[in-house]
Length: 205
Image 1 (cartoon, rainbow, N blue to C red):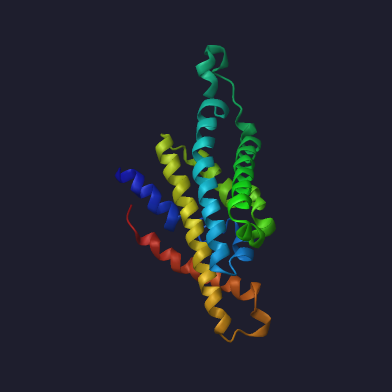
Image 2 (image 1 turned 180 degrees about the horizontal axis):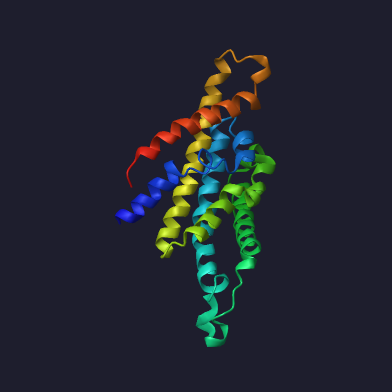
């Protein structure tokens, strides 16, 4: 239990996908103009990441990894389909992104219109793909640890985009120099928040 908590906290704060690795910056910058849209996209990312990371873990363990097909028989023990990881992972992510898009369009059409093209672009959000690749690289021994890592990474990304949206809404009342308005000041804020999140490196896990 303690190990799962460590993985969860570390993936949320220390290895935050935005502030530690700057993954998923396209939708992070574009959709963080308001808290409402940031909240909606963040929840969608948490769902997709929380589902696809453990599913990709199972695929990696029983289909793609070296010797993963040994359950089919000794003749398959040497088969290595690791070169298919990118294609399979992206296919899984795209499938669940399509599911999320249909659900949001059905039950929250206003949010669907506000998110626009950035909702289907979850499929190519490098934060989600990065979580699956980190899961593969770190070789978590159980699906529970992989699931906690996926959820923690998703919540970390949601926390980052909602925090940025809240700051950008407040900055509407600030006197930002004209050349820095929009994307410029957002990049500066992202860097400053990344430095702030580095303080979590002091957490002993």
